[in-house]
Image 1 (cartoon, rainbow, N blue to C red):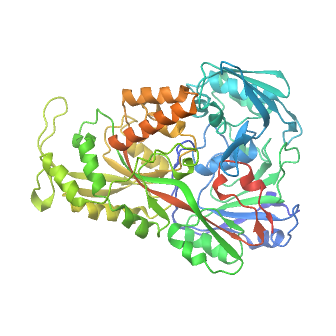
Image 2 (cartoon, rainbow, N blue to C red):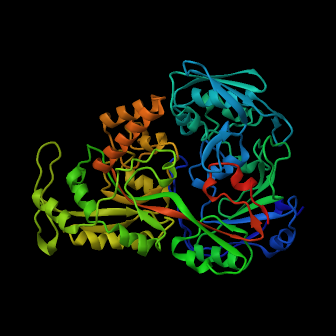
Image 3 (cartoon, rainbow, N blue to C red):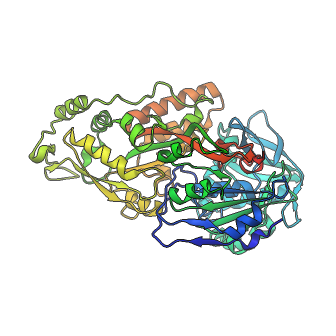
Length: 577
């Protein structure tokens, strides 16, 4: 077995870009222009063996792990790391079906308030027994400090009252009320080793966010892997945990290397230095077709791109953008099919739902929510009827407003924040939107958004009050169950997962109702109603649902690309072919 604790990478000079997709808000990125290369020394040491105990699966990605602390991490790749390192009670398996992970079985009381989980036998990677007491500590600590340092994970435990451990292999969770989303929420909750983390909690859990597991490697893990090396924008090494309670890794290790741009990523793959590329850029997929010994996989993905609006009803300027009629006109002006063909190389479909195609098989996508057709004439008719006449340069003019939010007469000219680290060409998409909006007398100006955290600060400014921004482009990867994604536009998610600043008490009540409906048919009807409501209100105009494109060398097989960040089989299943 090669020594993976001293892996070297070389870094070419050049700027890099970052981006947030809140770990719970699904959004991702294509980054800058520096290459991170696995050294030839490492590749020669790990690339020759092909037994299930010695082969190293080398994975290339444009998504990085920004933290190994689940109370802190916000990048999408963080979820992959947490899923591989920490036990979960349930997870998604092949076919995107919810199944047991650490829990071998579970049952609920007749009133739906008490859930009992029977746990598989295992140990933490340092040999300490993995017991239900670890789960009790993690859950109860998260609940106690839910309004403080553990707030990020506490939302997953919505409706959970407490946890207890009758014995080492049994966990009992008590709810405050029956919940339709309890099990699916648990897929997003990670069990921590109490004997490691408790010492950092301090008073009211204050130290939990400050603990950096990356400084204490190898990580103490209960999942299929421990992390022996972590480089935020380099290579992270996952080595098998010999005490894991579930299916073992077929690889001797997994080496995940972050690349700042697709060019260097694909060059390394074509050169044979990578076994798997988990996010082939849309515009570059065709370049890999026909390469001997390589398989490119295309399937419907769960990335939904959007044009977002500041929807805070107290927004003081350009309040015409709060109008559902204005937003309807804007949607008619958007050439979605041009976006599909030009920006995404044909690897996307026009889309209008807040949920992605991943949720269709579960029945959570309202089939009546469809994109409006491209019809700039219809858009112009709507804006004319609203009284926004064209002025100098053909730009429409909004009459002066008085009252609580006075504003002088002004052009329909708006700034659109475009994050720098989208996983598609955000500048090209903006140019298409800019040209399209010119046809309806609306001027758009691009504002570089920086990385994810910078963009979020701009969108929600000033100081998280959602008052300054007009519009922005972004994207996310919705979960399969709709509960979380429908929550993103509630008032409770301000300064957490909300980027729109939407504040609609009627919608918030609907969200509470759907989370408590245990009858699937009734809940689905309410979820569809909420999806239609959002499509009509348009805090976002959803643009496209992209394909998921991956590539692997034929020396490996057994990949489940759609389990990325959803299930442990994403890393444990691949094996030398």
